[in-house]
Length: 96
Image 1 (cartoon, rainbow, N blue to C red):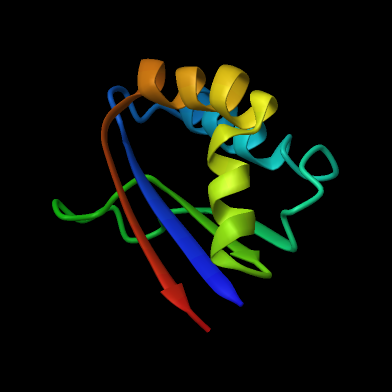
Image 2 (image 1 turned 135 degrees about the vertical axis):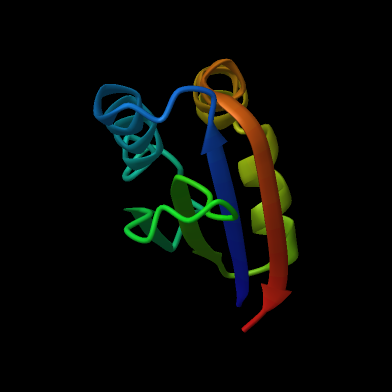
């Protein structure tokens, strides 16, 4: 199994923008068949080094993760929203 974690630092971390980003990420549930697990959380510490929103997903294989990256809903809907609302995005992928 592959874990895919993404951290998002918002350009403007207002409650409204945080909600938009969280809802967009959660909207992937049920739309991407290769997505085995989806969790989205917002930062509660709010330190200088904190990111604002975290995405934690799991896939059966590296091939499924790669399919997710190019899936039309992810690539054409979710990614543009994240790029428009975020000043920084970091990710890590590893075998579970």
